[in-house]
Image (cartoon, rainbow, N blue to C red; front, side, top):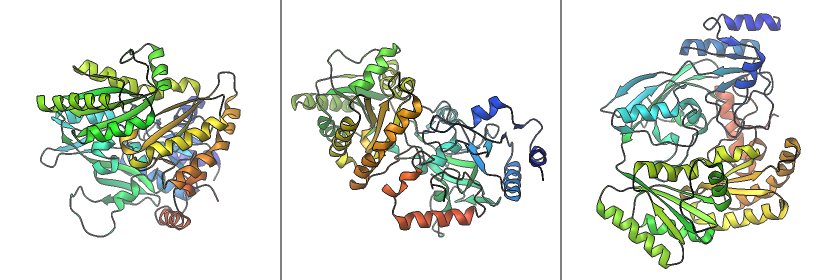
Length: 465
């Protein structure tokens, strides 16, 4: 069958006009937020039903065509990049909220539902969907599930997998499976639902997800605290955790703050210069809680752990304090940063950061390094900014040289080379630093069961053999 005939057959499987091959569409849908791999897809297909997804997968098996899932394309590991003539399967038209169950506090939705859309729907029901991050306005639920997205509330609410009650998936063979059926208690063997969460579309495609919701938080309040050094941040965390149920505990460096404030969208929280900042959030549900927060702040100042701080007094102030943290990623994107998303257990964070900082400073003395992350769950984001005059490919190649040393430190601390961004193509060559050879062999065997012809997002998670 000719190349044209194969695509003509694909066009019969979906609605008219829902297969695109023009250059602009290939460029737009063939990439995510990473800039490491130029997109080169064969076509973009937009199924509008589960049956159409199954038909596309069966077509791909019949013709040996690789498929790459596409959601909001906000990923940072090239997990949704089509760089080798794949067909991109976009879920933009599978974007409806299907059902809400008030008693179970669950909502069934299609994979193309945008994260913010689900959050707003929950709010309309007087409930709360707690998985949140800077890209929530464009990321999609299917992508969140594929990468087990984390974000800024993990310290209290956990990762995406904690909120998935049930899934409907189309496997790499084209079979439709209904996993867990939204049950809270289900002790009937292997939980295949959990296999698909974080699998980056390498086992199959999510076509429907039932997500759990929670009660809405009451009077969320944020504090931004400036510390004299990074080591002071951990006792501050312990002090506040001993008094309050934190919904978030983030950190960022003075360099990160300077970039955000320099954009002019939000003012600095206070005048005192500090090398590191902590942003914490809690429910000020009573005067007693607010009083405990202020008393803990004063204790941290007395101990020399905090130099200055501010607490939000309104919803607007709360949002402005959060902008200091949430605007970092978008702001530094101007410098085409080389990103690492790494994690260890919380107790190891200070020593871990010191070791990595020393390596980076030694090998990148002329590069600007920006640290920020979800310190409350042990997740650090290391960003090396590209000098203005340096060519992108040379910059990435230079940064890649030090990955070996950075990931050797991650391995020594029993950490993860990818805390929340997934493996994709940017981390696949380093998977052995976080997973043993036996684990990787079992993972590949699982993929073989669900995707025997290797058509589902090939080259992601595992390096091509």
